[in-house]
Length: 194
Image (tube, rainbow, N blue to C red; front, side, top):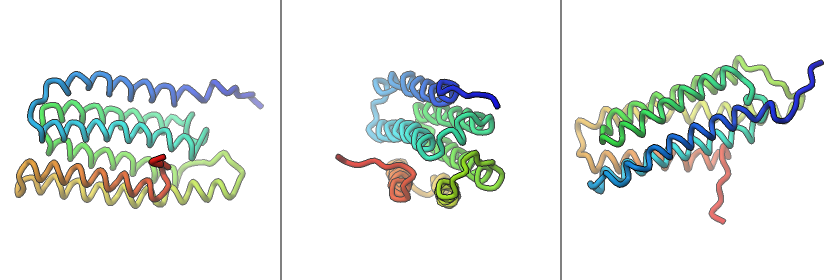
C-alpha cells in the first residue's frame, strides 16, 4: 500500500486558485477603460461570474474532498472551464454580450458533463454510505440546474435579436443572480450575510 501525504492532494486546489486569481488580476485594467454604464455593469457581472465559479470550485472541494482533487478528468474539465471563463471575460471587454451568453451556455454544458461523469461513471473512494448518498444527491441537483441553465442561456442569446442591449444585460444579470441564489438554496455553497 502506497502512503499518501497531505501535500500531494493540495496541487489541484492551489493550481486552480492561481488560475482564477490570474484571470481576475489581468481583467482589472478593463474597469478603467469602460465608460458606458451598461457595458460596465455587464463587465462587472461577468467578473462576478468568475468569482462565483471560483467559490464553486472551493465548495466542490469541501463536498467531495479528495474524491475529485486528484482526478485527471476533473482537472481536464476544470481547465476547459477556466479557458471558457477567461474567454468570457475577454469578450465582455469588447461588449460582445451575445457571444458571452453562448459561452455561458457552453460553461454550463461542461459542468453538466462533469456532473454526469461523476454521477454515472465516477468511482467513490469513501466507504461511508451517508457521504456517498450526499455526493450523489448533490450531483443529481447539479445536473438539473446545469441543464436548465444551458437552455435558459441559449434562449437568452437567441432573444438578443428582439430586445435592446440594456434589457439584455439586465436579463443576463438576473439569470446569473437567479442561478447563484438557487445554488445557495440547494446548499452547493453556503454563503451567509453574517
